[in-house]
Length: 454
Image 1: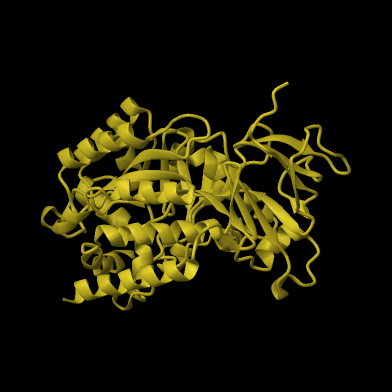
Image 2 (image 1 turned 90 degrees about the vertical axis):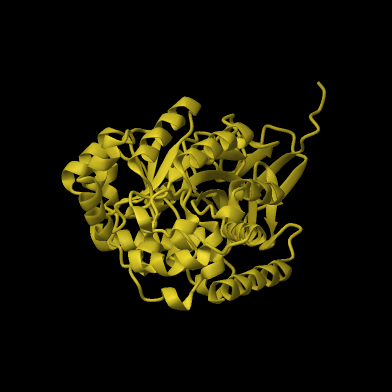
């Protein structure tokens, strides 16, 4: 037999693991998990490398299903503090209109790096700002993700309904329907990889009902079906949005979504807070997924997602950190803790367990993105793994290691593997000078502020 040139790695005897029947660890070859080792057993495969995980908690790589990478440039922005969604957006649109290509590049690099360090292996970004200087925004993001080696689903966002047409965004950041659809098709043909183990996928994502036309929503859904890609948008985040839809279109948000052909299993929505019982039922029957963004929802006082009602109706629930100007962080393991606690306020502690929260951030999030090859530790799945140590003061005295990651407030992974390759080792990104990245990013943020104040 000819020996493969891909080494076989045994991640041995984890302290705890979020999976069944692999207390003895996980065996990886190439991009895939090839064996689960039961407690006290040794692998059947001939091992080339062994990593002792006896002081680490092993999780499937966490999956972030809603973000705005560019917003890392406007964290804690003075003019946007202490505001609800609509006034918050209006105060920031005029700032974001000045983002330059190099700023988007470094903001994408920083957001992905921050996510990776928090145990996230797959990230979806919703980029919807395309002023003249940022026409190739998604190309820039693809390049940065490939450099870092992270798995991404980049959504080609859009805004076509500017202030002069009754929308929320300024005219400087909107595009015509023709520009949007043409670029959407170009990006799908250039970058979308539908194969198992794909590192880069494209989805189509008009920003929200208050920033795009009805025609664009309809034709985007048609293009997504033609090209077999997924659909994403913000929906029912605030009561203001509900009122806008009623006034502008004569529909509540879910009825509007149905009228433009978006009620399908192809669609996942960010936030999904303000639904009545009939709407929850309709979303579930049509297999529309929901990305819960707890920190952002608390920061903007938007409300609390009805996660269990939606799940019971048939919707899939996943998690997202949302933009780094409405969360001000890009930390997935921290977001799990927020999701667990916020949902407990609605449903009680016994119904929102740490296991359920882990499921939302792994299998649930994978399903939102239409992926069956990631999101769990199982033979044949992609080797996307996150390991966390419990060697900080915050964990001292903890007894259940899996629960402790969330209850005691884990912030950073010790090791992260994406597609069988170690991307984080000893709490740092392999080959990345974090201080240098912070310097470049903070310089870009200051420059953006100067351009906006000019």
